[in-house]
Length: 118
Image (cartoon, rainbow, N blue to C red; front, side, top):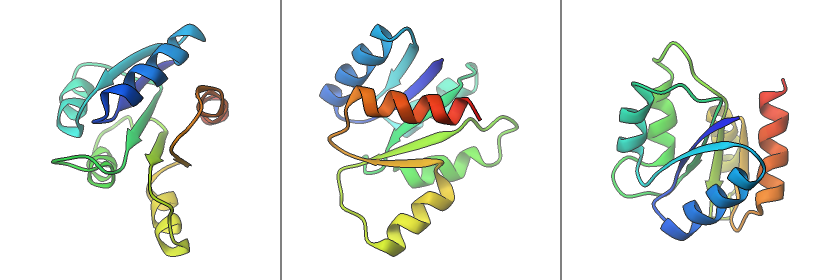
């Protein structure tokens, strides 16, 4: 899989990218939604994994911006916050899956395989 990983935390990006690369995936990682949108102008990806709380454009606004694009890959949200039922439902309306940090590479890989395999 070709995965776009968007997270402002360098440690999270490095850990997840290293683990996913070790499982045979190609990982493009960026620190902001702004950079991710620019990257998507020239690169096609199979799935997007995005943090929710980031400076500038947050994960929710980022995924909303993808709706207007002709190819919108499945999107997985990463959040450090425990969500209320209403927040969880709202996020699931935008994202194909929601994972709470800290997330293991194995758990993320399982979710990604399920999304791309649909």
